[in-house]
Length: 240
Image 1 (cartoon, rainbow, N blue to C red):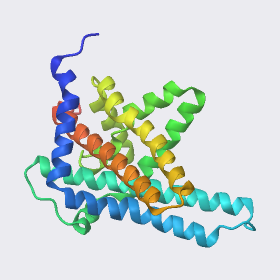
Image 2 (cartoon, rainbow, N blue to C red):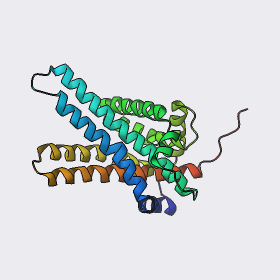
Image 3 (spheres, rainbow, N blue to C red):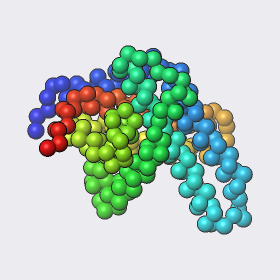
């Protein structure tokens, strides 16, 4: 199957737009990353230090670890939604509001519900065989953008819209969203282990910077690509 020249060039265009947003709105991006990524991670780590101990039952240790994971994942989801609003305003030539103003526009409950559902679907698909999990993540990986700025009125509608805009661009979304998301998880885990094993401040800072750069880059590419594909979407057929 041949790929149109425009489709082959699109990754460079998306990366250029993501870099432009990062440059023009670097303060907003940095503040959002600190609020949504760094603060929850630091808070969870401090809480774990206070709660976890050698004499803590295994079940409580597991529950604390799960709570830390949920808090961290929730921060990433909210951050992607925040960047989606920044990218949307940027695309339409409007100045984004402050962090607080943008946060009030976010449908946080629907974003978190969609993320939990997507992770569950990916886990089930990957448990059966890796390929189904990757297909699920590709079809529905843009659900967050559909909920925030794509016009989806429910979680179910967001999933349907994500699949609709991915149709015809599966390989593009797979290469620019799915693969980076999977690699992001591995890179972040590697950096977190490096931080845990490091005894000096330099190693800790380097690990944190790697986590932030990976999260910010993947999120920016995701929201810019979603906005790009959504603009090409033909109007939905009128109900009979």
